[in-house]
Image (cartoon, rainbow, N blue to C red):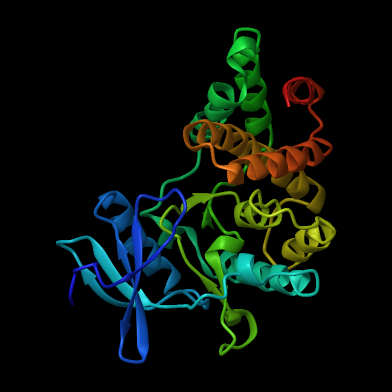
Length: 305
């Protein structure tokens, strides 16, 4: 296929190193993903693709792989991304559709098929928390921030939960990576992309990525209902109370990292969209803290948020 990008439509993909283009051929369109700037992501994408092919969900079909140029030619899911089409009337329908897909993934993947994925550990969590300490805490207050205590509290909290990190996690299962496919039926109407960062982790990771979305300030009215719905339809060993505790602890960890990430990007790019993301993430973090029992950790957040 022609690798010349001059006549292709470039598709924006946020902060990713990969380049995405739409190529029109007669009446059909294809998506070209160029991973030449991150060859590890190219390998990861193909590894995760093979895992998800065994699951009854909608992912784009791959038409061709160019191993020399690190490009993948694949099915075009169109323009109906969830983040572009949601409104007050269809929000619950889209959220429920997305949760149904997470349930299918959790029920149809097993550990032996995930051998090429990395398992999430506290070391990974600590690296993510460092973004908050490094970029969110103002420099004039950084010397007073209880960094060592902060990490100690998080380590204790993480290990006290006895997480069963043995499940597939897309990592970025949120509206910007989901498409509504009107010509499909049932849960297959949800098209899923951008799965190259998948890892082995907490069974509810993708659920919290979806429901605690930091980029879109939609209502949390349906969260408790959908958390319980997910719990009832998956084989989770822990009781619902324990699962909710685990969910909100990792939700807080994710929001913590993003607070640092948005602050960093805001300083680098001076783009108001990161100011909006920061505002939403702070709001969601404050709500999440209400579900965290560790008062010492909560007090640190309440002081510095």
